[in-house]
Structure formats: structure tokens, C-alpha cells
Image (cartoon, rainbow, N blue to C red; front, side):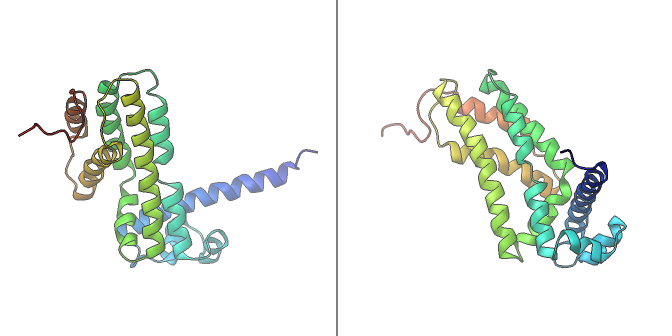
Amino acid sequence: MPEPSGVSQRQQQAQWRREQLLDVAMSVFGTRGLELASTREVAAAAGVTPGLLYHYFPSKEALALAVIAERSLLPELRSLLAATAGQPAAAVIPRFMSECAVLVAERAPLFGLFISGATSNPRIRQELHNVIAEGQGLIAGYLTAAVARGELRDHDSAAVAHLMIAPVVLGQIVGVPGHADAIGALLVDHLAQHGTVGDRPEP
């Protein structure tokens, strides 16, 4: 039997409120830093009582962990890579890095939370590590498939995935554009050469 419409509406309202709290917390924690920011500040910015916030998230740590888990770029990374099916790596990699830079800029407060939380809280540091590892794994998987298709030469896909992420994130943290597409083009130029990464000429 279908749920009464009232129940469904309450569930939708609760989900909307939870999403709002995550967005506000990302902004407050990212701007103030996790140590200085309080759940009372988050509640005030969201226009709710601290008690209502605790109904959804029992502690500041739980709220911060939820922000990292649910506001990371992993869904967008999956979508970007899924949209590249059948396209050559030489075109995909620079465009992918450029689009990632845009996504990172749109979610700038998240990286303030990353920095402040990772330096002060072991659980947040571990969650951040998990998110980064999964993101690098997605990119490495794409690179490995490109090698199998013969588009790129054999290489350490995990290391190159790290090289693709690092300048994008660093550029956002320091407030200097990272020229992500140009870096991507340089990586493609290197990986498209013959041979194997790490090869050295015989003396």
C-alpha cells in the first residue's frame, strides 16, 4: 500500500533540511576552520535551532564527516569519466583537468574544511584520505584503460592520477590558477611518446 502523502512530504522536508545543513556546514567550517567554528554557528547560519541540528548530526565531528563524504567531488568525477567513452585520451585528459578545476572552485569551502579538519582530527584525516584514494583510483582506472587501448604508453597510473589532482587542488588552496588544461596537455604529450615511463637511455 502506498505511503500516506503526509509521511512522504515529511520525509522530503527532512531530506531537504539535511542537505541544507550540509551546505551551510561546508561554508561555515570552510570559512572559519573546523576548530573555531561551532555547531551553534552552523545552526544560526541555517536558521534552525542547535537542537534541530543535533537531530540530524549528533556532533560537530559527525557533521564534518558527513560533509566530506557527501560533498566530495566523487560523483562528478564518475560522471566526467563516464562521459568520455569512445573519446581519445589526448582530448579527454586536458578537458577533464580543466573541468575538475571548475568543480573545485565551485566547492572551495570544502577545501578549507579539508585543511583545518585534517590537521586536527584523525577521523576526518582518514575520511579525507579515503576520498582522495577513491578519486585517484577512478582516474588511474581510466588511464589504465587508455593504455590497454593503445592510446597511452605504459606508466604508473596511480602516480599520474596524483599528478592530475595535485595542481588542481593546490591552485585552489593558494588562490592561483593552476593552468590545469595546459598541465593535462603536457601529461598527454609525455604519455603518448613511445617507450615506458621510467625508461632511461643506456649509458
